Image 1 (cartoon, rainbow, N blue to C red):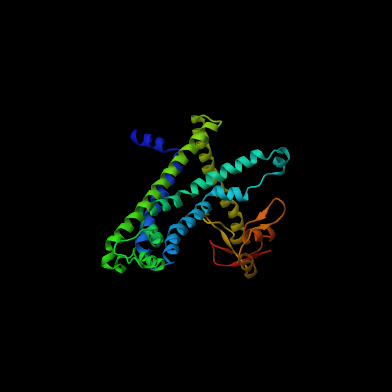
Image 2 (cartoon, rainbow, N blue to C red; image 1 turned 90 degrees about the vertical axis):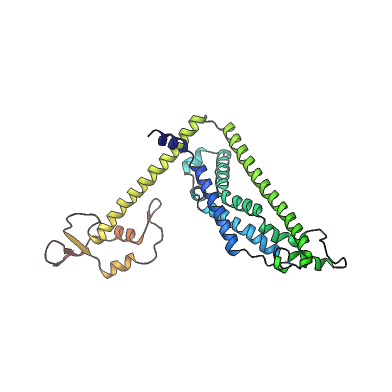
Length: 320
């Protein structure tokens, strides 16, 4: 019984590391499936480079954009506004700029996990790099015609990623070229991993050195922020639910979950039309908004219409 709490204590506060590890594992699995089912080098001059770089770079770019979009801090940074009081009492914008840079670096670090993992795995695999760079290898392969032009040599080299297109006398040359390109790709992949690991480690070291908080104080602060966000989300859900109940009760005469419902309200055709359609955030005044068409209707319309008793014979009455 004491083993589980120790593991929970160890994992507490490491949610970011665990999330990054899960993202990296999912990216590796997705890359393997993506390569197996979709990648097929065209083995043609001028197309290999575009095809290889597209498979190498475009998914990484998409993962980077998705990483930015899925981070709540991105939208806080984009939509966040300072109050007039804060602007008036903070003439020095240097602190605000530092805060923005810090948050932006934090967001970028999280967003780079998936694309860097994709690039590293694809480079270590080597298939994309071999396809993209095969026609640019500056070597004289065995059995080549010494009188062949540069264009003819590129055509032959471009076919090397496809073994079925290579003549038997060039098999040895093809193997050497593929080994050379895989060597370059895998070295680049491991260098990328090394650079990222060292950069992340040094960033954490520098952040800890310049942090005004001690190690334990920082852990407490992280725990507080996490708990505050959870409580805020719970309060947001409950508050919005209670607020929505007022508008639903006004429209239908009851709310879901109510016991001993005596009567229900029958909305009119005009009221159904008023709450139907596309809902946009509507500004009522400088301080308040209407969140939906039902919200807008509930604030404007008075409670009237037809009511139907539920515990008696279905006799419809009208309330002025």
